[in-house]
Amino acid sequence: MADDVEFASAAEVSLIREALRLNPQLVLKRVFDIVAAFGSILLLSPVLLLAVLAVRLSSRGPALFRQQRWGRDDHQF
Image 1 (tube, rainbow, N blue to C red):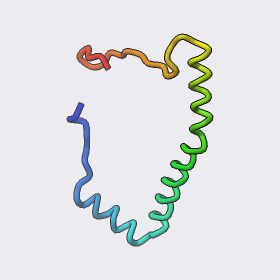
Image 2: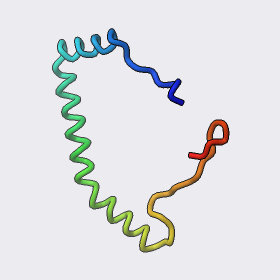
Image 3: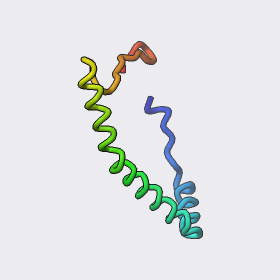
Image 4: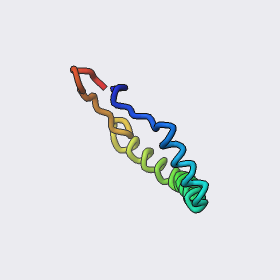
C-alpha cells in the first residue's frame, strides 16, 4: 500500500509557494475554508450528538456502522 503514495517534489512545492505569494487571495480563501469548516463543526455538533443519542436509544447496535472488510491478499480491515 505504501508503494502507491506519491510525495510532492521540491519543484512542485516551490510552484505552490510561488502561486501563494503572487496571489494572496488563495491564502485568504484557504483561511476562510478552514474557519468555515471549524465553525460548521461547532454548529452541527449538538445536532450530531442528538442523532447519535437517538440511534443509541432506539436500537441495540452502535451509533456508527462498522463492517469487517477483506482487501488485497485477504487482509481484513
